[in-house]
Amino acid sequence: PSSPRLTHSTQTMKRTVFRPTLDDIERLSYGKGAKRRGTGSKYVPHRLNADERTLYNFAKEHNYLCIQGTGYRRERKGKPLCNTFRQRCDALNQLCVVIERRRGGDVRVMIDFSTLRVRNDMMHRAAIMENVLNVKYPHLTVCDNCSGER
Image 1: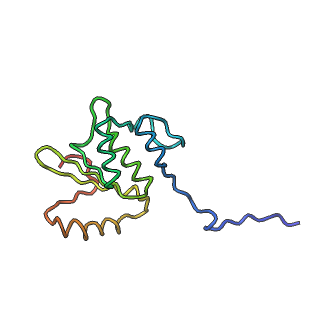
Image 2: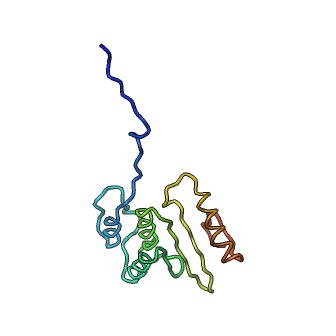
Image 3: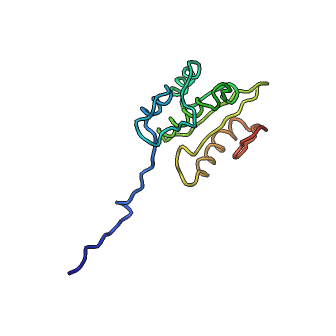
């Protein structure tokens, strides 16, 4: 007698990408636990205070986050507003755009492509460079992987 064969096709073995749910992100932003494991971390702050909640609600409406400085909170450590907004962008499969207004009038725009979960983001980066930055703001400088001050 022949034994049954197991066949795997690429169609049946699609890998699903884990994304947080909007409900879990809202729960985290109020300091509650997520319903689904893997969303949030006790080591990464997500609970928003009243001022951050106002900015977060504006960001939800306009699909970008605008903050004073870096958003870092000394009293509780970390950047809960940025963390929460990035989680939301990840759930919605959209770019995470954060605008930091700094002292002296400097403005830093950060675009996080990792929320799209694509293997190669060069096509997206080139489109933004060509259609937005180079056309409207030719005097801007672009920094890939900027982690420190410039």
